[in-house]
Image 1 (cartoon, rainbow, N blue to C red):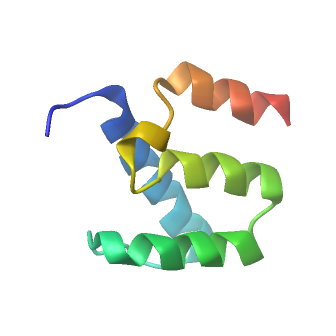
Image 2 (spheres, helix red, strand yellow; image 1 turned 60 degrees about the horizontal axis):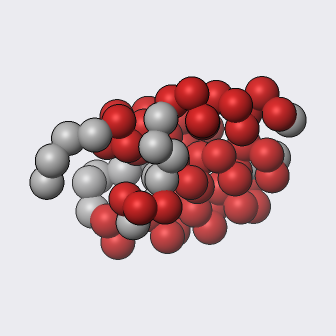
Image 3 (cartoon, rainbow, N blue to C red; image 1 turned 120 degrees about the vertical axis):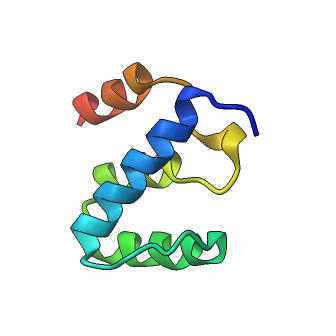
Amino acid sequence: AEWSPDVDLFQLGMTVLQASLGVSYLGNPNQIPDLHSMCASELPSDLRRVLTKMTSVHRAERYESARKALADLEEN
């Protein structure tokens, strides 16, 4: 796969998710829905929305740039 900003944003999102939830992501994409479920029940909706988008399994659903992710965070 070719590198693009969404790769770094995915990694940042996973780091924040792990720290926020107190869990470890072992690199298995099958874990992501479980992390998103935990996120839904444990984090504020605004943060959950941004982190879920940053860590989407589907690259096309992720933020195209850090600027867009930051703009969503600053809106709330």
